[in-house]
Image 1 (tube, rainbow, N blue to C red):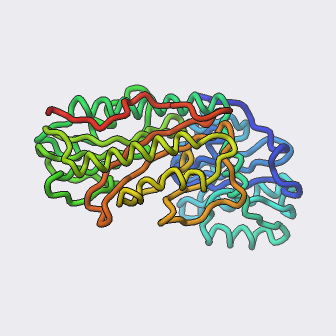
Image 2 (cartoon, rainbow, N blue to C red; image 1 turned 90 degrees about the vertical axis):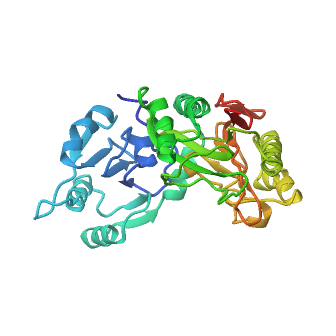
Image 3 (cartoon, rainbow, N blue to C red; image 1 turned 30 degrees about the vertical axis):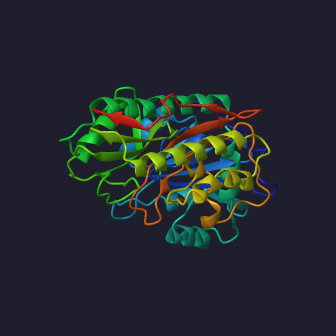
Length: 375
């Protein structure tokens, strides 16, 4: 499958930088964005201001698939060391020299291991290495119409996971079985798990308010709360839906209040997110959380695939990009994880929104409610 067309570098690469060198280990949003390859283990992309890009792939058996999927015309095996182990640096150095880039200013995109950087500096002493990761994240902020459609697909598959949970989650299941329900909802349509964070705990004796990254063999019981955060990868694009459910009975008064506050905070933030809005506008809208005596443990708002800004409430402020305002075409997850002060009780409610010219557009269709299952 090939998606999209080659992106022109000249419009947004900082003057004086001759090429970008993108480093990808595991999933790399940058390499997928530029070259249409969902990185598996290790990959390197040379993206020059002028000329064709070169994509270097590990491992060798991943090369045929990369050639099929990538929009890069030059896709090569990245090479091996003397013992046959993975070693991409000699091939990368050779490609940069062949292009006459060994004495140029080169933009590094994405985290690069220190040992790899040290070897590149030693092999190319005349090159100047510039961190370009921030500029790359800025470039990826505003989505094309095609990217929005991939996010719609992700949203649809993520929503299906929520729908399946509402149908099949019940007492007697383990959290591992809940994870199977989540993934089975989209695997047949080509979705890939990005995250499914889940916590189940008794509403009457809660042991935590934040969804967990790894499931356990805990058995779901009547009177539990099930808190979920689901993102399905649709060819590198990940929407996100967050919902809370109770098992076998309605929410306790404490959980109902937590969820009411989460929904109110969500609605207030949704109302202010539009082109020109600021981080301060979002935090002002979220003040209802602290006014009601609660706080958040997770991020309050973040961009698609954790693009900045990552916003929290005023009492947990961690900074913001200078002079930032929201823009048309950006996509953000609003996700108030409202918790008690000790974080032992909590809910999640939220989803990804697309900022339009005059407000926001829903990408998700999951009902906006606290679900009561089997009550």
